[in-house]
Length: 360
Ligand SMILES: *Cc1c(COP(=O)(O)O)cnc(C)c1O
Image (cartoon, rainbow, N blue to C red; front, side, top):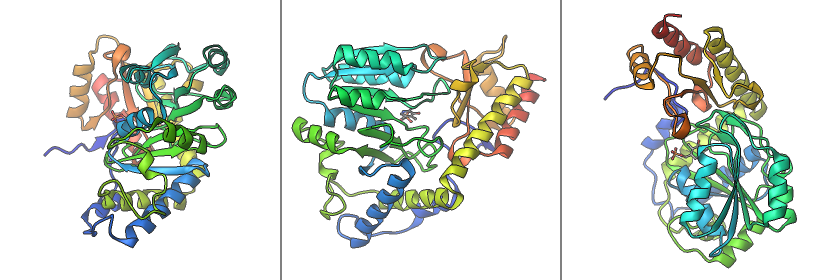
């Protein structure tokens, strides 16, 4: 099996030794043991602190996409109106998913080198009167970080729920779930939290629980059975105890470092990464640096290079970057510096290798 000396893909990220070790523990059956429920409660509390919310935090087995599907299916009654704020692939993805589920969807679209303009979004919320507004905090394929200013409050004013995918920014960029009036917040384990892709985290507000009760969705990814966990001492299926212990360790590491210090580490590593790319004459994507995410840097693939060739040569030099998707496929490559990969030495090693490949 091949290992990569400098893994710099924007998730799944490198899993640190201490977190990997949790998967070697032989726990008992999660739904029978008191220890499991107290661990669940402890991890919930740590997530509430990290994400700045007093609302329920649900931790499901699965992966981030499970949280996205589970949220849409759980909160939406048949034929609801969904306003999807989209400045990239995941924003448009929400629209596609909601349409596939039979809902009426309107998209407020922005370019993939832009971030959503809250004023425009708020205007559409008032005009359309949606049941749900979806948005993406970090558009990972574009390397951008959105400002959510006032969108949640505007949604609340028209009685809509506000759902935000912060899968690739949660824990790596400042975000207050309650401060931004987020009813349904979505996070996965394989990005900043640096676990394997095996947990889906969802913050659920009281308003969202009411909608969930009304919609009555039943299924493996349904949020409803999690409302009273851990107090009810019952689970809808056998949970991934090892992963939950791994998540506890990851959150404890962030607490030891200090959450503000962790944000600052991401911010400074990202700034350093952008500076080095620019010094090599590589154009950033987005061009406006104030739109850049602290967790992932996207840049234009240099002229006369294809992504396939650049990727192959970089791998030969012992570094793996990410390509991109959709409109950006073949045009943009990405350096993932989130969680365990938000390290200056690692980013420097990656960019040194890139410099050798490009002869710059
Ligand atoms: C990674 C990610 C997801 C989950 O996607 P996977 O392809 O399953 O990893 C969802 N939303 C965003 C913004 C992401 O970066």
